[in-house]
Length: 239
Image 1 (cartoon, rainbow, N blue to C red):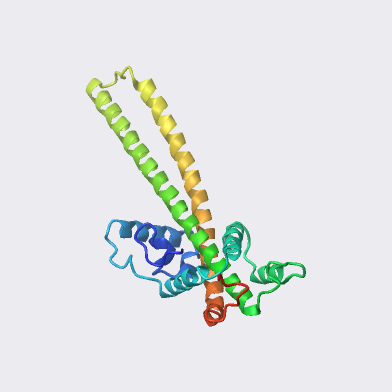
Image 2 (cartoon, helix red, strand yellow):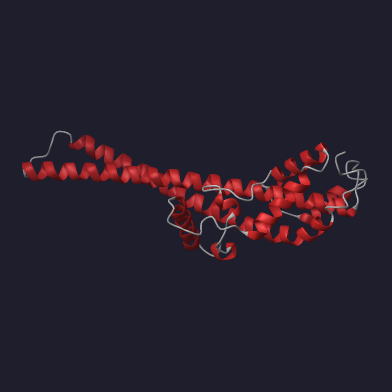
């Protein structure tokens, strides 16, 4: 089932008080959003638990519908969503595949049934995308913590070097070479983490743009899916 009310860090999946379109305009907006989410995790952002009504409504409709359909169609929804999460979204192509001649799995379904399945696939794809966002943000937070630990270690070594040099004037301590080697290693590690962070920021922006696209698609599909709730055919509905 797709959650429609969850606590941090899962909040990103269903609670989006900020505009996704505004977020995806540039990297600065992404970083501001990450900061707000971090603040919500420490209880400093009072509105972090605010529900996105549209996301909650579509998740509830999904949860209510998915339990009514036959197992083979549930499996189809799940597997197709996993495929769609890795490639470009195309509703028309999805519908054409279902309605293709010789596709016996869908041949007995009504247009309303097909529309319902399309909605379910898009909603499940949105859940997959939300999971990708959560995982990406978790990775970025781990990298941030690693960079902070490296910064503190670097600061500690430099402080120790300064104290020894000050106390001995010009005389250099015996472990200077080892410290210099570690400082060079720290710099390399920080550079690697910076590179990873830049890549993650780009991926996160792509995930957020896809989320925006999915929300628009789901919004367009909601009416047909709601209308079909009481008219699911026996060919789709589980007995």
